[in-house]
Image 1 (cartoon, helix red, strand yellow):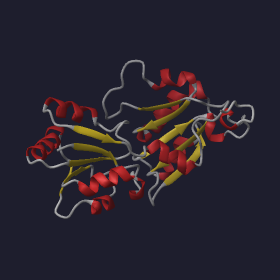
Image 2 (cartoon, rainbow, N blue to C red):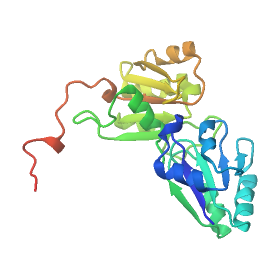
Image 3 (spheres, rainbow, N blue to C red):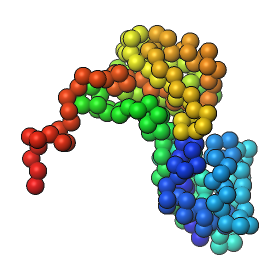
Image 4 (cartoon, one colour):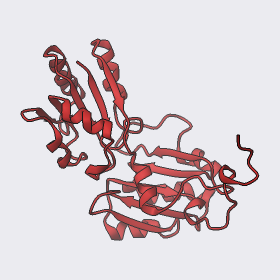
Length: 247
């Protein structure tokens, strides 16, 4: 028996990986975040599978479901939105499973920031413009940020920044980023990336907060900040350069 932490992707049902889909098709127990994971994916579960929506469960209740499946010798597909490596609350589940000596594996998925970049038609690492991406969030109504990871400190590099779980604080985010990035810095907000009801807003730090308010976006969105969003004059990558030494 194994618990499979599966990245379900950013929202579109067909963005789950083939490996993730095979796990889903073969697991007699599926735990899923009902508010985030597309319901269509559950149609791939085996007939008669136990389907548990974890949206209203505590960590103890979720682990109890896994332990019960372990005792019954049943594999578990634990569906998380996006990719389990980022902002997924998987670490504390793994810690509990290790204490209980329940085996687990992780199946990566498409993260929300990658889906947002795809929708924007932009690369987040552009030669000569930006080669660093900061993935972060804010602490309002969530676990406090560690010391030194506040937006003021992180923005000092002016690297491309992607903020999750922060759109509801867009005014505060803008205020903290303005001193380093400047009012003219390009910004995009992508809500419900890859879904049929996706919304894309493009602007600058000077006007993005007004756009977010007018669009009524309050959740399930990422904020992308950085010069790469508007980059047009930049050198070609060395990867395909005729001057690159090839074997």
